[in-house]
Each structure stands twice: as C-alpha cells, then as structure tokens.
Amino acid sequence: MNRLPPLSWLRAFEAAGRLESFRAAADLLHVTPSSISHQVASLESHLGQPLFQRTGRGVRLTREGRAYLARISAGFDELAAAADVLRPATIRSRLTVGAFPFLASEVLVPNLASLRARLPGVTLTVISDTDLAKLTHADPEQRADAIIRYGNGRFPGCRASKLTDVMLVPVAAPALVRAGAALVEALARHPRIVVAGPYDGWTAWASGSGATLPPAPETLRFDSYLSAMRATEQGLGVGLGIRPFIDGWLTQRRLCALDTAGVPAGQASYLVTARHSERRDDLDTLRDWLLMRFAGDG
Image 1 (cartoon, rainbow, N blue to C red):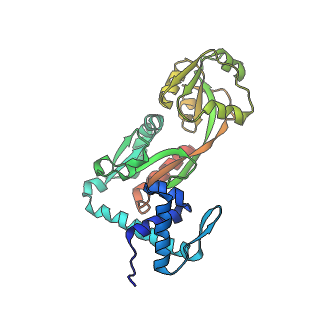
Image 2: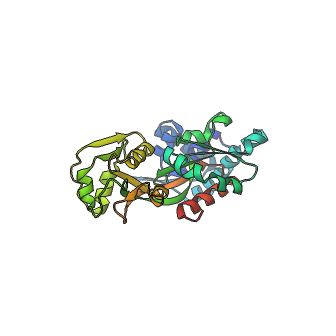
Image 3: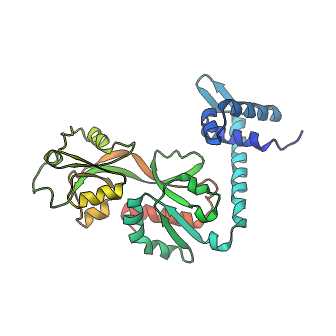
C-alpha cells in the first residue's frame, strides 16, 4: 500500500477533523460537503480505519481519527512554515500588526516605543486592516503577521489567543452632561452616536444593563469606531465606549463614563495569527505586551 494518500484527501480530513464538521470544512476549502465526505471516505478506505463517527447530528472524530489528526495537522504546519526559508532576512525581521483604526491610532501607536524596546532589530508596521486574508496574502510585502480582532474565538484556519474581555459603557464629553445628570436623562437629551455595522452595541448595552433606551432626539451614524469616538469627544452626542480600549481617553478626561459598571459586550478581543506561526518569538512578545497593555500594566 502507498503510505502517502493524496494531499487533497488529507486536506479534507484535516479541515473536517479540526472543525468537526463536513459543512464547515467545505466552506473553508470552497468545495461541497459531499466532496469532503467522499474524500474522507476514500481516506478511511485507504487506511482501513474509521476516522469519524457519523451521527444524525453531524460527525465526531474516532479515537483513531484524533490520533491521526494530530500528526496530519503537525505535518501541515511544517509544510506552511517551510515557506519561511524562502523569505529574505529583511522580511523575517519585520512584524506587521493589523487592528481596527481606533486601536491602531489611539492604543498601539502611542505606546509603540515600549513594544519596540522589547523587539530590538525588528521593524514594526501597524496597519488599520482586520481582514484575516492578510495573514496568508500571496505577496509577503502585503502580508500581516498578526491581527487584533473581536469575536468568539473561532477563526477558521487561524490561531487565536484571547487578549481581553470587552465592556460597553456610555460616554460623553465632560462638558456635555451637566453635573448630577442621570444617564437616562443624558440619553434622552442628546443625540445618540452609533457605529454602522452588523453589531448593534446600544441594543446589547440596554439588554445587558436592564435599562430601557429612551428615544433619542437625533442619531448620528459613523462608519468607524474612531470617527464615532471623536464625534463624542467633540460633544456632538452620547457614544458607546468599548473598554479597555477607551480607558486612555477616560484617564485623560477626553471623555467621561456615564455608567461606571459597564456591560459585557458578549465578545472578546483576540490576537489572530496564521496557523503555522506558533513558533515565532516576536509574536509571543507582541501577545505578552498586549496583555500587559490591556491589563493596565504596560
């Protein structure tokens, strides 16, 4: 028997085993679920071992399947990492970090000197881009090494390290809200600042706090969190801050929190990297530095 099955069978099995779903593996590999099922079945026949237990609710790895997946995943990681030897040394000594615009300009850049001190000889680049496709861009010059993203921790095809839980808190310019004014009064008196997109932060805050949002006299919409917070800083309305990212502005009194308790956003921030990048010391340093920053220690 040829000990090495076709690579396409192994890729289908690795994706299906890691995600424990033929459909999710099909979406990841841009094929049909039936194609994944056929390739996995062919691999099982080739090996003479069942790799998945099929149930009415989906698939689960067998004991043999889990053992095989560990070796196959390690092999794919080695194949992906092999490309590093083709990169010029100047590229290997660069670290490109992607983040949404507010985090990039208001958290990363102002504190970049302390990160540079921890990474001597490494050229740092910060980009306002959170597209995960950047992690595997065909052109090394366009590739990101790490991206800071919101989410639930599941980023198919990537590795993710949790950085911090995030909290929602209404904020306003100190001069906007008169002393002693109640939060509900502020929400009713001033325009409400909203970030356009699929995540409805104000509804999430109201649900988590048990408060009823009063009708706003006006709604101001912005396409980025950075623009929304700058509008809030200018006294144009009441915005929804995301802690700990907004903490620097609160400390500097550029904004004040109208509700000190805050409400969990239902998501967390993660440092997302390519699957083969776990052996990079510079990424470990970046992760540790971010953990300290968000804990208020760095």
